[in-house]
Length: 323
Image (tube, rainbow, N blue to C red; front, top):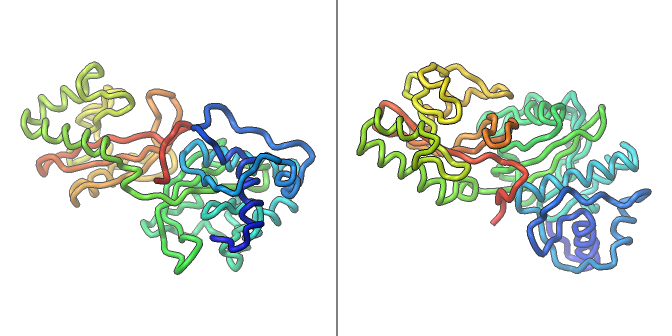
C-alpha cells in the first residue's frame, strides 16, 4: 500500500523505527521491547529520531522482530484495542506491503487490514494456490511457540495476485495469535549458491555412479558438507540413499513419511524431481540447532531412477526474503 500524504509516511517510518524495523546494519540481538504503558500513537510520538525513509522487513530475523513487537504491544494494551489497530489499513501496523494479521485458534479471522470483508471467516478450510492448508499450519506453529511458514497469498494491491510469502506467527494470549509476512520470490529462496551446490552433486553422481556418489554425500567430513549445506537423496521408491546427519535412516523407505505438520514431503521430493526439479518446503529437525525449523530445499533428478537435493533452514539469521 502506498500513502500519498507525507505525514502518513512520517508516522509509518517512525513506527517502523520504534518497532526495530529501520536499521543501518543487520540486527544482532533480540527484539527491542516497546515502551511501557503505550498506545500505538504513543509509540510514534515518543520517537524523536525517525526519518521519512522506509526500511521494510527483509530478512527472517526482521519479520520475527516485527511480529514479536506487535504481540508485546498487544499484550500490554489488551485484545480489543490491539485488534482494532491491526485491522486498520491506514494504521501504524501496516508498513508498505507488510502488515499484521490476527486470528483465533479456531481459525476465525479477527484482523485483516486489506481484506476486511473476510473478518469472521473460518480460514482453516482454505488452501493456497499449491493446495496448502496454511492456516492449519499457522495454528500449529503458534501453539508450539511460533515459527515460519512459506505459502502463496494475495498481494495487497492491484488484482490481489497470489504471491509467495514467508510469514512468522506467534501467540499473543490463549485466545488469539498474530502474524506478518514478507512477499518473496523463488530465486531469493533458492539462490545461485544452492543451485550450484545441487548441480555439482548431480554432475558428480552422473560421473561416479550412485554407490560412489552416495558414499561421498553421506561422509560428514567429505566435500559435500559445506557449512550448513549437505546433500540428501532418495530413490524413486522412497528409500533413503543418503542423509549424512541421520545415517540410521539410510536404506529406510520413507515414501509415506510426513513432517511435523503433516506434509508428505518425501512424495513431494520425488514428484518435483521427476517433473524437472524445483523448490520443496517442509519442516525438519535442524542438525545444527536441534530445533524443528522450516526448510526450503532444491531437488533434482539424477538419472531417472533417483533424486538428490539440498536446502536451508529458515531460522533466526539473515535469511534474505526481499531483494
